[in-house]
Image 1 (cartoon, rainbow, N blue to C red):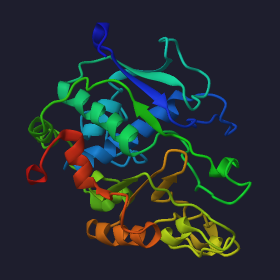
Image 2 (cartoon, one colour; image 1 turned 90 degrees about the vertical axis):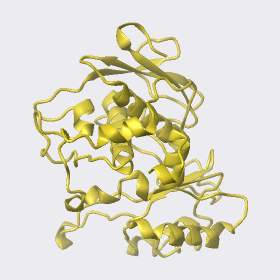
Image 3 (tube, rainbow, N blue to C red; image 1 turned 90 degrees about the horizontal axis):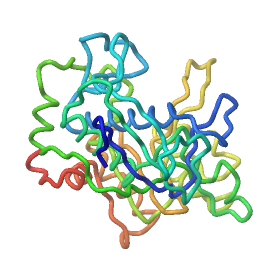
Image 4 (cartoon, rainbow, N blue to C red; image 1 turned 120 degrees about the horizontal axis):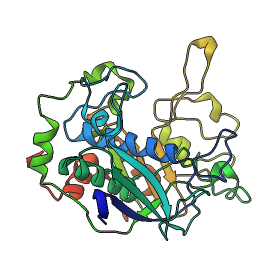
Amino acid sequence: MIRAEGERVYQFKAVTDIWTGNIYSKENSLITTGLLGSIRWWFEVLVRGLGGYACDPSRTDCQDQNHCIVCELFGCTGWARKFRFQVLDEHGHSQTEQIKAGTSFQFSFTPLRSIQPVEWSLLDATLRLIAQYGAIGGKTVYKPSDEPGRTSVVQHRDYGLISICNDNICICSYDELRAYLHDSRWRKIDHGKFACTWASLDHFWDVEGKYLARQSRAFSTFNRIVGRPEPKDQSSMGDSWLSGYRSNPQRQIEAESKKIYSFKKQPRTFGFVQQLNEHDSMRKKLVSVWGGNGWTYLSGDQIRGQLFDINEDKK
């Protein structure tokens, strides 16, 4: 929906509760910046997956006029964000309480400076990527559980799944997007220098209708896939790139997020591979858990094709 002054409003419905937290890590309030940060992260994933450049936002390399495509829209040091972001309830009033499952809500983006159609198109595609294949918020799920009496425990609850309700607002052609992303004005990032190299649509995958979980104290399909020991009393011994790393200052290890996310309420499992040639091996791992029938592994290439209605020979 496009309103006065160029405001774009996207309508959603929460499939699960959405967690943004507060300074006390409580879930009963809505922190708008938590949602915006999540949107920006997925925007970076999309831009990289379309062959563009996105900086590591934890650094301050992009400044003033020397910035990447993501910072052009979302801002960086010396360059303000181009829009005002608001979260509204279904009646258009400011949403301040946590968004609960089943609740309708809206994201409002009001231009503060000129926003090009191609930027709106990238934002539109990002929100669809989140709703159709990913999740949003400061917390999604630790890992589902099928153990009796454990499914409702907070660390096993799903967060961040949403569905999008409105039609496309502004979609440029795929060729227009590619031309914009490769414009010489943008700061070129050597992605090889950043830990977020894997955070690209090229490395992304998604499976709908299936989930990974702990079945008992001895068995866990989630741990099996991420490379941790399955028995509960041994699982803390198996940090890996897929499972993420716990902070260990003595060993100079910084905490790092897991790379596989699985949801039970509306089954969905998505994640990232470290190298592009690992998609087939990841699919085979999932076959070892779920069997080979009744589900489809979508790689980033296929998802890109669905988002933009393109053939991969145009990539």
